[in-house]
Image (cartoon, rainbow, N blue to C red; front, side):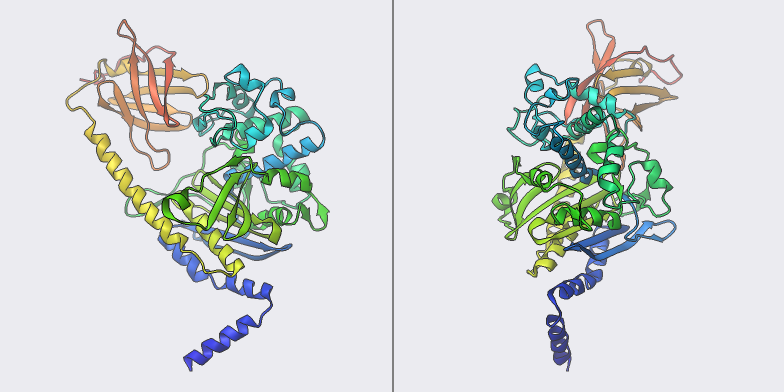
Length: 515
């Protein structure tokens, strides 16, 4: 009898139209999503699936506010972070269509005020280079991260980005290039990037709840809070988002919902049309999909996985072949939030996934690809187990690295100077100021909006405590020929960067000798 019931259920499912069958498949995934959220200790998830010109599945899981038990809904707004980049590429494409910019001519031909670290770069880097992460310039995210630098100031700091590779030789993901490109739009239109985008993209797409700031995020009565895993037991903590998104705007400050993002994805999946209005020119969409920076098939070479092949970054998104189907996607991460969008342009299919757990970045793509498998009607790949295995490998790797780090510590050393001598302000022209202070016997490290206790490691090296929100910073204080502290070398953005001392030490306090 049980077999007969299953057979009837299967036959009734197969008798449904294809569109209805897929809708039913999405409706049956609740248990799967809840299990994923348990596996990844995730408070909230929001999912949207587009087929044709319709949002066929939209649902929130878990909580946008754990403390108040407020649920995630399709209208809950989340920062989408780097999924903002395609918005920027498309708005700049509108200026290309107007003849105010060109994809493949030096950006300096149109924006003479832009500065790079070398004259040759000034005459070579194009808009496409900037938007496809092939400028060869170093990433240096801590220039903007947690800072209050405005967009114009960040634009002026492009000249300090270090050259790491030749133009168009390799991929170096670069948020600063998107910030500079977005400010170029402002210079050419005399309009803010936000204003131009609202007028030319958001309004025609009826994305009325989409905003651009943390203040507007918090002002919404349906916004997601972000959560961090603060210990090995899996305890979660909410951290109020205090990072201004204004400066980074074009690289990552869009805040949106499943419902609003569905309008955007409908346009992307339908050659730029939304409700029979041509919002985005097909030529612009095609340029964003045009491969500019190829990636090696690393997972195929290393592990034999062949679901995703021939990835290449265009502008604001990566295109690839997924199980024989052409697909384009992008992820986003900021302040404890993650997002994932994917489109199959030839099949009018798209997905958006939003998550509010800092430690669950992998979850967005796991869900996105599982939903894609359901749409394609193929055997789902167990991406979840793969990512959980990788997570365990990373934990072991970090534990080993921490042990090696401790082993390198030289015992029984002390600073060469009284602790008061280390206090003061240290400056780097791109990153700004680091302030070292002393309260009673505790040294403090302040950088942008980051404040952490600072402790002696060995000799003239000091490390901050480890923060689940900001990580850890290490520094070596530099001594001049006369024995004076003249600067510090900070381990930042995967490099050692020198900050010069610009202020005298604070007055000595009791217990501050460092002995």
